[in-house]
Image (tube, rainbow, N blue to C red; front, top):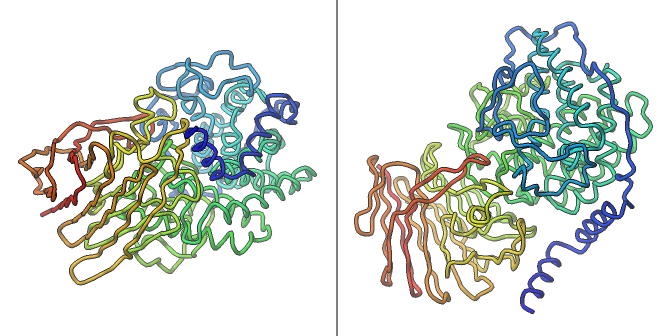
Length: 612
């Protein structure tokens, strides 16, 4: 009975309109009622892009990726050649989808034979289209030949609408956006070849009938599919396609709707994830670049307001030293609009582009690789510079950012208007001049062994307290927690001459309470955790930067004179340095040192992290 009640409460939290949309979609596809089941389209032949009089500066920098090697999810390298990839195989280990000529709706969501289907989708996101477009734009004719050859092979091996690469509307949308941005790079927006427009059209035919399912997710599926309909539809309409105008209007409607619903006034995004925030913001950037390119009417005022807020949110999270940021929330390896060879975890190109588009400012004063996307997209460089981020509370998304000297602390507290993907309440990250000293585990994979599916999104993989060996919220399915936590109290951010401080607390569904207070000064971070209400035990975890750590009583230290000391007003049953796991990149996991502190009764635990 309790389980039924919990599921009912979670369903209400997800929203009846969203549940109705999802149910209508699933039943419509299964029963053949959705028009997506009746789609047909001819295969457009090459060429899709043509050689043109080179207008790019000879000094312009093109990506080197996809020449001899490429990387999957920003970390797993594999070889490429003039021959197209095997589009239905994992490029790293060669595992293949069985019977890829099936209609997409006949292919299961989680195929045990291939493992994580994202490994199949990765090459079909058309990152290589952008790379070859850049290389062709500076005069490399071999890249233009490879671009057309690979596109022709892709559509032959993935005929509409068969195989795994047609299964997801968002995947089709990413292809549309990348084709459009390649046309911007190659200056072929106004004079596209018919084959390219036909390729875009057959993608929009796939996206449009199922967009309500994307909308039901309240995440970046909706923003991606709306942007693809707007971009692709307006492109087709500009070249006489009547259906294009309807698709463009539909895309504009949902783009504006998604901005208003999914982005809070303070810039927080519905997915509570650093990387999914980047996916959304890159998508909005492509939509705005395209709108300017075709001189289309501006989006609504609220769309620009939320885009500016989302830009400043991401700007606040990123270390200017290296572009990295907290491994916050779900991270599936997605990266859109890659126009420069920077590391996957370098968010500065995205921040800089969004800041230029939506604030008309430079995010970073000095010149760097982050300038290059603006050059390729034909955007002028703003003259004014954005102020450096300071202390901030993004309360609508449940994040506090504290800065002092070169140190930054992020505290995550529960403000779940949308479904949480991780049980990470009161998780804390500590950064020092671009180094992640106390860190989040990440995601690893959406389709892996049950052990890892439970570990990475769970409470045990975060810098917080776990009670009675359970997650802070009960897991209902692979992507859904129930009984969403609520913050019970907040102590506002305060700044003094000595430190900056903040605090928050929650009470969970088992009547367990956790109150966390943080104080950041020039040389140390002090965290006080007040806990109680648990049955048997509580375990506080601190996930440390990899290195040579040693434990001495209630203190751990490393060779760089970093020290973490624990004090409690109750007996400490166990204090131990163990091996934990983290995933900085999707499908990659590595060991890290984790300090575990076990308590068996209500307590106030004080953790002091000091650096030289």
